[in-house]
Length: 240
Image 1 (cartoon, rainbow, N blue to C red):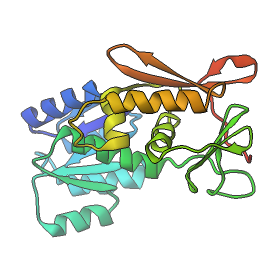
Image 2 (cartoon, rainbow, N blue to C red; image 1 turned 120 degrees about the horizontal axis):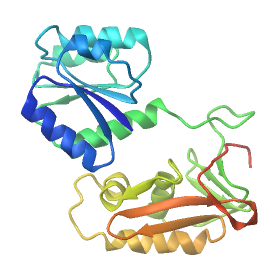
Image 3 (cartoon, helix red, strand yellow; image 1 turned 90 degrees about the horizontal axis):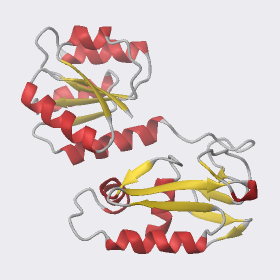
Image 4 (cartoon, rainbow, N blue to C red; image 1 turned 180 degrees about the vertical axis):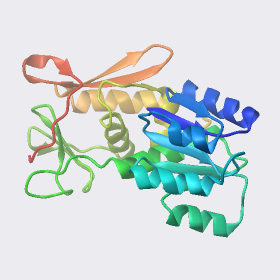
């Protein structure tokens, strides 16, 4: 995921950039509002400081929103509620106050991206149908139900959450930290053995429809099994 970071405070920017890169984000960093508006892109999300040296960040936010619908998260030391309200009213998708932790910013990015990029709706039932993954598996996110060959599969709540997260980007390598933060808690500091238990359960219950590869020292990669037993990263949304 490509992030445009607009921040003139070098220590803050460097810390945030390093943290985001550790979690697999690609970060382009600029220090002025003009550089943000001149940035050729593309980017998936903008992290925008309000206290820029050449212009007010709210003006940059308004200009970026007028150009398109890229998600914008304002990051600022300003704690005044008026700035928050104005920022959201002119097009920001979220607002994070300094000081903040990298994990908080990542959680905000993921939440904004989920809202901004809903899955392709099922034909005949816009926005309400299940997502199909290969010929055998469907995930109905609205009803929190999973079906294999048309039959509902009984999943524990966290098994479902884990599957829903991993199928957001089939084929992508997700670190253990990313998964724990997304599925369990952004402040999870306990052992991650529970993740292995839930992965094993999904492998058993959805055998033949998905594979979940463990990458030693990193995390897991989910792939969809297509006809003939070949894993694929592709997904299609269709009525089940």
